[in-house]
Length: 207
Image (tube, rainbow, N blue to C red; front, top):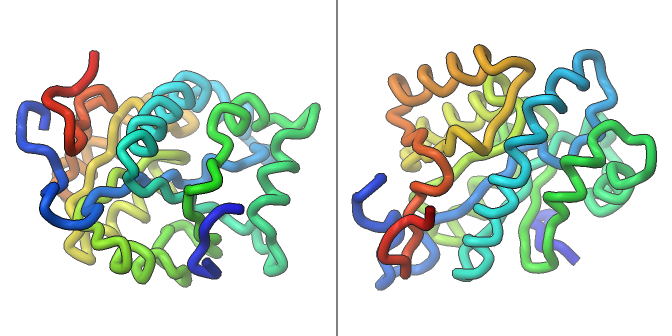
């Protein structure tokens, strides 16, 4: 059962090992059936991002660092996250190739969000505070919508923002590139690839 609150490159590690888990990975809207207009376009760019994101999540889990899913409830106020995962794994569902690579683990956390930002109207901030998180690694879909809104809200709350450029996707490469540049410039986000995200207890990023 998933936990819920309803349950630099070459730089130092983002987490101080003397403290609690001050680094967390956030996966935004990756559990998605993509059954909407232009969902096929997003699928095209999400496919290469999914294995990179899966590898990054495994690195976090291997070090006991929090992995948090923030997912849209699609206006369904009786949403059940586990049921949503199972729906997205059904045959014929457009988003299945992505979701089957990013199935949550029992130790992971999740929050359901009603709007674009993972912070708006959710318990995410309370969860991050309880986990003593200071740096938020934000990944998922779409780069120029929900990832952007979430990164903005994280920055406004004084979190250090990391957005691995190979772990996000939008409906076009141009839209992703523009959003990443904006977040780097305005939100001071680190947008290096996931292989350059240095985690505590590691001597160098894996290649």
